[in-house]
Length: 209
Image (tube, rainbow, N blue to C red; front, side, top):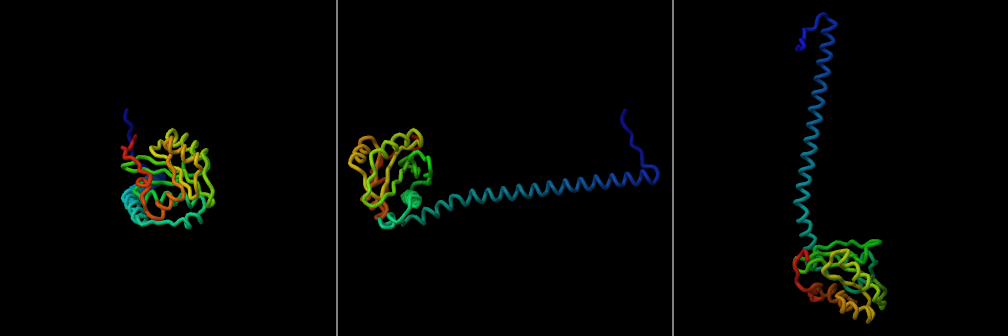
């Protein structure tokens, strides 16, 4: 049997009914305001997300244009610390048309900079900033060979130093496909502006290989 509602009788019931009505109205108003605030918040978030998505490519283009004329002398490179050297290598890759990021940190598994190029695939750089005259040994080549492809999915692996490499390191790298950039090559790349893929004569390859 359906419940029947009767009109409040007497001043006490009328007062109680009025209070209930006020409480319901307040609750409805609070809910409406909360929903309104939620929609405004979501709308703001959506607008900010769209703005970020639109600005991302613009910022990338701006950075690429800013770095287009980047030149670094060996004296400037020698004065850098390890972290600054890694950032410099990243910027040089960006200058050359790579989408590159500095990833070097403790436990980086022989990868300090990783880049992607539409024609040359994925590259991993292992940076070795040394005192002038110091040489990188063959053990570095072993480390890079063991991680560049299996761990980082690289098509190209390069050891870059502002110093030199031992004869064993250069010979082993040439034999097993680990590219190297010593002080002389670094000058051509950083100071003279020769793109890395031209300096190392990198082959063209499709992305995803």
